[in-house]
Picture 1 (cartoon, rainbow, N blue to C red):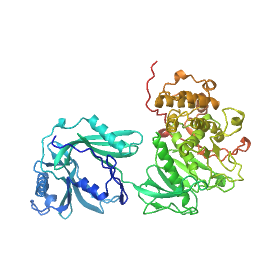
Picture 2 (picture 1 turned 180 degrees about the vertical axis):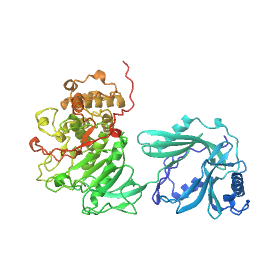
Picture 3 (picture 1 turned 30 degrees about the vertical axis):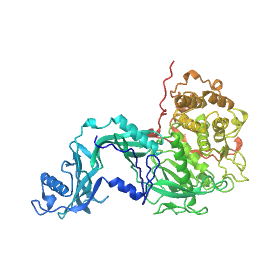
Picture 4 (picture 1 turned 60 degrees about the horizontal axis):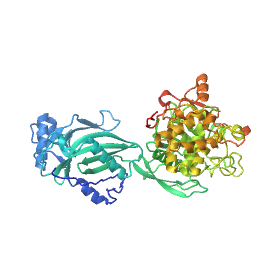
Length: 609
């Protein structure tokens, strides 16, 4: 090899008008001018140059045949320093360029042709030539050409193995701090990278981490360059970090599409009321209205849903179903009810949606400003990817509510749900004037308290079970967070508590080789969910998906409503069963086949018998 590539990695993100600081291997940082100097040191940028009309006919390329076109472009490049051992190859298709949405009327009339630059059979990385032919006959050449003074022969054996290159790219992604969650290699190809006036054989590898792709150029000595393939803007969104009672104002940096609204790939907002004010706009992607402003609610819910989504993704969640999810603020529910928040899944036409009301200050308050509210509702979206049946009175619905609370408690590290939403005189909250619900309850499955409560409050036995594990320290917090998310993936579409405890044990077996089984069994027993009570055989805990829970499955089958989910709300319910306000408000949404899915377990080990 004539040149050994230095092991380095260069990342940059085009973000609106700003370019983030590049991260170099070893922790060194560069400023923008130095970064761009390195980026283009081995390339020549060809600005649009008019091709001389020296071919047959008065209109230059537009009147020439393909051979003449090729000779004209190659001759122009030779005159502008292209190495004589490099060649150009036309790419398969030309393009007519028209303004979007217009017919032939308004056609720009430009014909664009693309050429790759090659040395023998191999393409030169990051180099390309384009010709643009205008209607009047003018022809232009532009592009990026390599600056080299030598071309040495290469064969397929000149490249490191693809496995080795992929591993080096993955190491580079991890060292940059961008390998969050599963990473997939989506593309690989050979090319020649211009370095120090020569061509280095490298692999071009594209890795997808989460929803963001990264491209790497990997030579024999490691990663030469790595770029994030994303062009989203970063918006500044102001909200309370937790709520307006115990929290402080914070400016969140959240990725948005850059269209002037609070919208990204996963979350968007809407005005769910009748104010006529519409959505908040900012050409500068700065959404910093203060508390008391009408739009502060929109800022708050957008910031908190994105914060919660980031957290569940860091702990193993992968988005399922249509996107984006729409958060509708200032919503008024049926009968003029403004004391609720609700999640509604995709119904075949619209959704998924989260609806958040303002609160009347008597029953509930601050619903749009408390991060726990929309976090709970987004938790339903996470769970609905697997647990899709939740009828009133069923253990499936209790699980939905308890797990949505659990995810919120685990992210915040706080066992009180909705600390700012309970007015002092309200009888709605389980802990008066403090918590809508709590993981610190002493409720046990089917004890007198449990039997007296409605579904939302019964869910405290589920959140209490996980919180007991957290308080005991028997499972490290980082492992417990992942266990919660993984457990959800093992739930069947309709589940009773037996299926739930089995799912937790399966997740523990799959992630941690049953390391925490004893702690799980102890905590479950403490909440009345012991394996003897639920008739669970440990010999069946082998990482397989558990069978559908008998109680919910039989009801679902007989009712003919399998695949239906009630609208899941924050649950404005009294602690007394006699005065409970049902969360379903008499509605059931049909869930179409494309979003009724079975569980997708994480990869598991095969237990030796």
